[in-house]
Image (cartoon, rainbow, N blue to C red; front, side, top):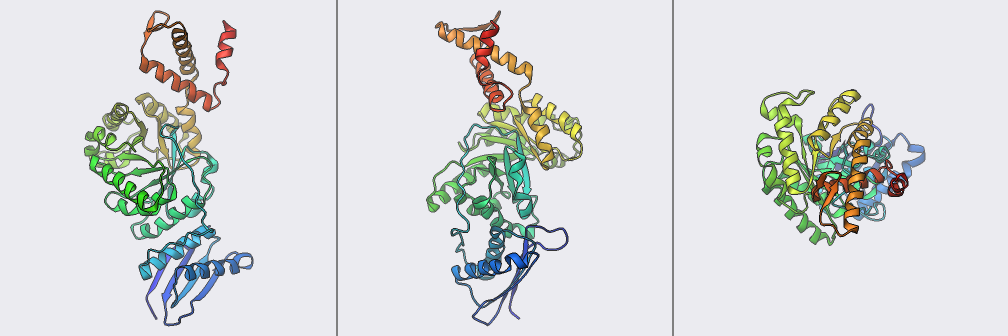
Length: 407
């Protein structure tokens, strides 16, 4: 018997995945054994796919055993490629028409109220995640993936980026800590990732390393598109260095805080009212605002406590955050409602915008609302509030006409 390599998941409760065993043999013609829950309908197609990949990568002298639990082709391809890489060390990729490049771009400025974390080695959770309409979907290669599964997870994440419909959600990946995370970039940068999260960020140099590696990989792969960065602050040292981290690269568009690791670093525990993290959250908000990027709050870990989540969102917004993470789709609606502009905010913003436009039309250098002077930052925030309310369908796009009719 030759060396044996495995990749994937199997067992009770596993769906949309497979477990592949590769054994090196002395027989030149590959042996392929397929056991599938959908054997009658797709057994032959799975064999053909396996054969195509082996042929394309010029692999023989192997025995392949596939235990399939309804995996889509991109998952089977990822699992097979990972065991081939383990067994033979080849870096040649199988990315033909089976995995057409899914190109999707996002702007520097956009709503990032919610970002949904999904384990990078659990494909069944990824397939239809976009239908829940989070602002961003994070394929996680860090804490959500066991250490012995991180290598094979890279192939799943790469193929998911190429094939899945994210339904307009920003395509995000949380890489591993630098320097290990630098190797993750090879699997995602050529495949139109929108935003990369850098975990446990404590120094600006970590961001700089990621940014430089992105530039090198894009040049090598001959792709040129915007990739944004979101460092995650998760320690006392990271909090104290938040501002230089925020300024470390022009790719940085947001900065998040991770409170589970932060409170552990302090030697305390996380509480509902967040007293223990008030300083850190305020530091992150102020550093982000000073750097002109979005401050993003931590996740709320109790997926069954919707009222607790609602109160957490209220506190988060009051501190100045623009959004937060979530670990279950049911949290998305509460987060979006909490961070959306409220009626009094919209009404006040509308008055400011109208006063500003009126002053501009009259050639006035000063904007006033009643007896109060309005400076540029206030006008900018009001314009943002109005644009947000319109984009979310809270405010009619023709709101100015309605206001004029009232007069």
